[in-house]
Length: 436
Image (tube, rainbow, N blue to C red; front, top):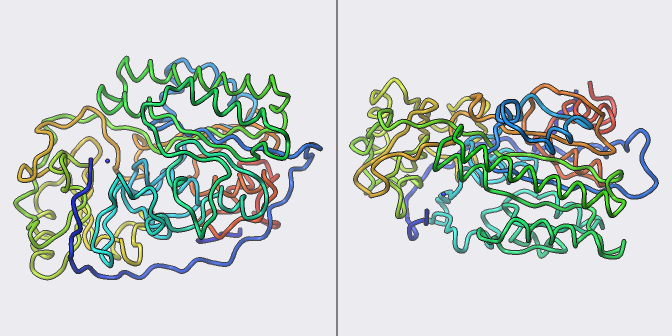
């Protein structure tokens, strides 16, 4: 087996010292992927569709005819494991780069960068290259020729060494979904030379409904039906253009959602001296609101007091020092990895009343241990590189990048994916030669 390694406005700049943690260096790039066993004459394309907050269990229990039809003619994973923390920015960027947070730097939605002394600002951060490390798949493609078009994918608003997607746009949360679908399909009406070989778009509806009404509410069910309908439009649009047979359609989500109860909120503010420690999750207008995890940066007695206090605060909190986190967390980024990480059990949250925020938690939340079933993400794919009617075991989302690279026939950058997993999901059409 061959393995290759590689929410809420933020406050103003904070100057706090933090430890620099060791992390493994990226390995050399993997071998070029094998082509599909019976590749069509026309160039293959990839349409990547992100459905925020969709746990695969919802697809088993609720109607989603278009997604289920896509799975029937392709591959569906029993689950896809998000990276830790199981948040949107973190995971959509891991999907784009094939990297764990320890390598791409987005260790939370709005990370703290100790050397720069600042927290990611949602108003400017999407355009600041410093935050977005690693190489997203659209940059890999643009460097090697295939044109790309991206609508609202995390990390797509920033240039990497001057390289951008051929088509991209700043995030517009209120842009109607029908307009999004129509615009994406219009990309494929361009002449062949300008038509994107890789396209991606994002829908937030399921996540938003899950947060404010709960992961199993009628509103969440309606949200799933809505996005399923738009997926159906995209499939039919490609079919009408004669592009369906040569397009790999990949449906992914970033995480699932857990049900939250007010009785399961733990007050932890008394253990954390915010005048001496930085906690990104406890900053901004809603900073004191209930959190599934908190990252703490600092040193000395204040840091030790936080560790001791949180360790005894509740049996529903797990606290880790830098370098001592569970192996599957992959959060020890060289500069942004936290000095302390506290993670609540699924359904439980931590808050501090000292810095504002909501007095009660919202009904749905994510960010918990990435291997917990409530955090499971969705993977469905159909197209030339995928076998038909297959259910595959759960796998990590860092493997999706390599599948896209294979379909496009480009050489991937180093990733944390596993070539054997890629080969299994694609029925041997992709993955390094000789992978088990």
